[in-house]
Image 1 (cartoon, rainbow, N blue to C red):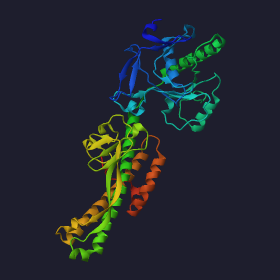
Image 2 (image 1 turned 90 degrees about the vertical axis):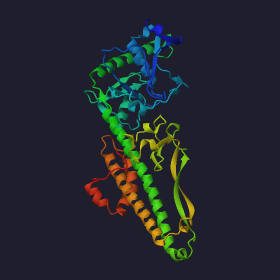
Image 3 (image 1 turned 180 degrees about the vertical axis):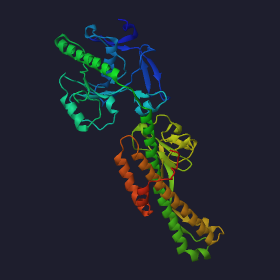
Image 4 (image 1 turned 45 degrees about the vertical axis):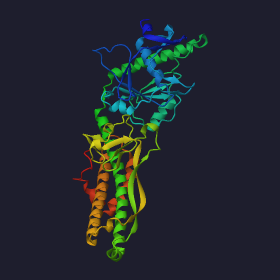
Amino acid sequence: NSTYPKSHELSSGPPALRRLHTQKFTLDECDKIRRWTFGQKHPTKLNKTILLVGETGTGKTTLINTMVNYYLGVKIEHNVWFEITEEQKTGQTESKTSEITNLHRLFLHDTGVKSLDAVCLVLKASQNRISEIQHIGENVVLFITYSDGGPPKDVLEAVEKEKIPCCRDAENEPVHFLFNNRQPEKHTAKYQRVFKSSWEMGESSLEEFFEFLKLQQSKSLTLTLSVLRERMQLEACVQSLKEHIKFTEQKLIELTMIQLALQMYKEKIMMDENFPFSIKKVYKKKVPITRGLWFNRKVTACSECQENCHLYCIMIANSARSCEVMKKDYCTACGCYTSKHVREGKKYKTFEKNETHQEKLSKKEEMTNVERSLKVLLDENEKQQRNSVKNAYQAIIKLCDCALKPDSAFTLRHLDFLIPRLEKAGELETRMGSGWVGLDFLGPI
């Protein structure tokens, strides 16, 4: 009864559905990550953090409300059901969350989650296939929804088949808890026994879960987040270097063609300083991003060196300073200052155009000076290309050393690109045997 004044009625039921009055706190500047608080936090009680993970339609929202009702001491005889969420249902079997929660910001933000006591993988009792996921194994338990109360054979077989890391009991079976998710449905006398059984199953499961939670040690996410951030920086570095390598290779072709043209037409140029010749010139310009989801159609790019430092950056904030590739006021991908970067819905793209070389040669320069300047440009580009290949390879090796599960597809894709270039430089065998000792990244990683 004391909870009634702190809520308002949504429907009369039975059970009567009531929305709890909560305090809302925004955890980021874009108002995308929020905390709803009901009641007062006890200063002497230990805080526990639970993460619910599951596909749309598995019943995560109902589970949250089930926990709330359990803590409020609600029994089936009270004929009331309290809700704390603001989720809207669009159909009988389809639901959507009113705001997109950016999990990435949730964990990396200064006011976000710093530790976890349990990760609850929410699965339907009928589910027999699970997508590959990564979790902190011994803190992962299964919340099985839409259960009839019997052994969840399909789910447990799917967990074993996909080798999902999770906590196991004394019989080496994945720790799991059963729920039916029918508590907020309208109760009728005909099905009262069914609803009572469903309620008691959820209540019993939560009693067991919270007893389990008391014995669990919190897992700090500080190291995990540090490794994740480093992986993002390294992957962005590899992608940026790969683009830079392609551009320098095209630039080398352009300069080589100029060099060949100078040699071919040397006599004519010496006689007529305005003798023109055409060469394909490569250049970069920004173009709008059209692929990808709306919330990650952003690129952190450097205006100084015209590099795409982080493609499809998912940070909500518009400031480039908030991007994952920034570290200590520097970009870990290109090495330039943070202030030289912008984050927008455009990226640099390489184009080619025919350019007539006449203006440069119309100056009264000696032919030898022109050739010398060209050779310097060629040498600089070749050096840039070699260094970029080495740095990209070193970043991939460092990625493989990260503590989290390596992304073999990412590694193989970029190694396929780099190995022929290492072989061409005649350094692959030496480098693979001794490692990349003494090489620096373009930025301070």
